Length: 143
Image (cartoon, rainbow, N blue to C red; front, top):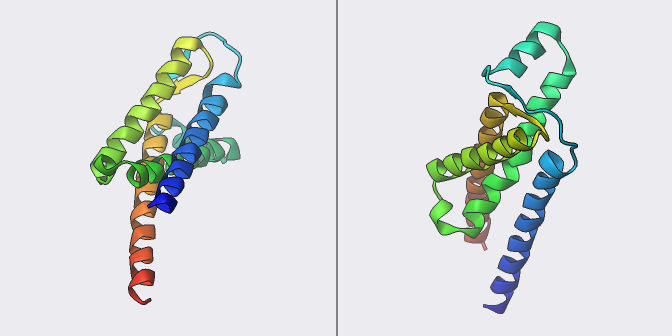
């Protein structure tokens, strides 16, 4: 029981560090500017295919990767989030909070693409959580 509690405490601490890192990257490390927004969904995808500019692909991939841990930590630590729909919704709300904070403070650009890509990342994280559980069950079953 004690080992389980220390693992859980470590995971909660790791989740906190992850959340702080995202806060720092998306908000604290930026200077305030005028508020900006882009409400054209899939604009970064269109720009990448139109101009073949890796900047847009990087932003898509980074926004997806950024929230994969969110989709892993939530169901791992909190039983109510052991549902695809709940993780997807929580990932969307988490991203929305980031985007609104960036818009209000002028410390980033509010983009619908970021909402979409961050939500995809959280859903991928959830699927990785499920895959990991299935692999662990299979491994432990053979022992």
